[in-house]
Length: 230
Image (cartoon, rainbow, N blue to C red):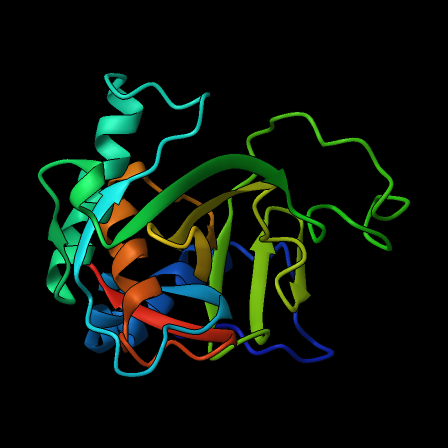
């Protein structure tokens, strides 16, 4: 296995081949833990609580005026939510009038500038800088746990991932609001957020699964959930 250059006072960042050695060594070290790349971590925020002793019952989607029933986006969203609802015991009502609960859905996805990309003191003035122009930097990253790692690029090296941080990352969030149909009472609201360099719309079923994990014991608060990718 190639030897990774030591981070010492005598280390020279421009030594030939050091970048390739680091990348190859990182791949070898992480190979036994490839299973970690088949999962994602999401944040689940729950407001309210599912009533004690209340069964899942029958549900129908309560669409907002801006949500077109026949649009591909809405169909994809409702199919993903229906899959998660059925797994915890809900059944789809034939008509909204036969439903015990109504379920409102929300979905948003955006591209966000990373606060760590090209921040001071390495060539920038801080978080108020405009997003950097696309360039041909070679990025590599090695991390253990949360917030600990090494980021590298051509011409420099930084501890903590500053130099190797991507300029932007994806933020995707889904919401579920359960409403008692007869009393029009809000029962529980769930928000699931996934932030990563890439977050696909194909993750929607997984995000809804994470939000309903533990049902009916949906305690109010924020929790971290790890979801296995198919």
